[in-house]
Image (cartoon, rainbow, N blue to C red):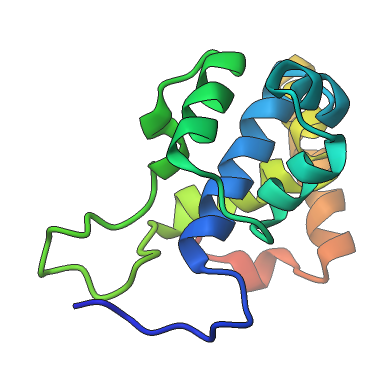
Length: 147
């Protein structure tokens, strides 16, 4: 079933593809300016693609995939299969994958994810997690049974 969307709001698929472009670019450490240069665009156009404000054409998505050294399918990972009648939503992404995607898309998220494995194990990592939980307003009792 095809869902209808508010025509003024960015399409959820465009938002998803844009977020995947941003995440891949950031993982590779490529600036918006550098990607834009490789594609013959302005960095503002790359920003609009990443925000989902502008749709990425098939040919441009192919160029982006080549510039970011990833298969085109990478940008659609996490989307429901449109041929499957079992899917209720266009953006049925498992909660852990969505959480990881949202985390990596935040400023500093990618850096934090890269640094965490370099921390000494055991008590240091537990203290870092306790600090983050405290800052996020969650305590251990709220997380009992999670994780």
